[in-house]
Amino acid sequence: MLRTQIYLPEDLRQEVDTMAMKEKKPAAKVFRELLEAGIDAKKQGQSIGDALYSLSKIKAEGPPDLSTNIDKYLYE
Image (cartoon, rainbow, N blue to C red):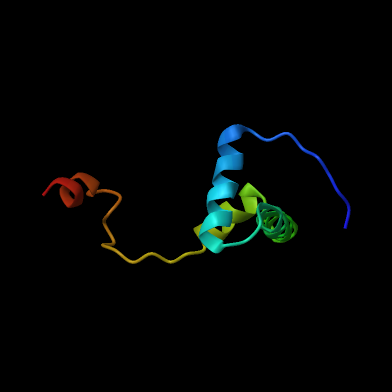
């Protein structure tokens, strides 16, 4: 393992310390787990365009005239 020093905002460090206390783990281990999870998410991550395209494929069900009668459905 390599030792690395980084600067963190105080609130971020407090969040990690809180997680470490709750999980009864050293803060260093929590940092490593969070970094691994973040790197994995980044590797698998979609661009915003891909995410929006995925959302557009979701078939929502509702009244067929929803777009023309939106006020009726919202306020009545």
